[in-house]
Length: 86
Image (cartoon, rainbow, N blue to C red; front, side):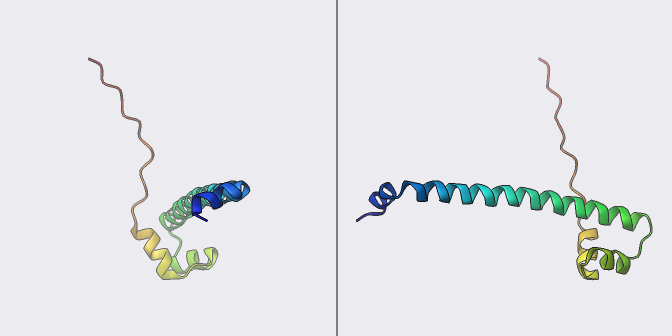
């Protein structure tokens, strides 16, 4: 029995695999958005003068992780390029 004949015998397995993959992709997108929000909040707190140790306590992160987040430049906002006219 080849893998292609096996796939034909269990079509519901294919749908389950696709559904699981789609769920992982959706979860990754949510995680990336949450990380961006956390980084923005950490940057805002630091700019407001909050000490790194306090930010670490409030977020449940260690101070090194907070410093690493602060060291990374925030991602620029999505930019739409103006259309050229001929």
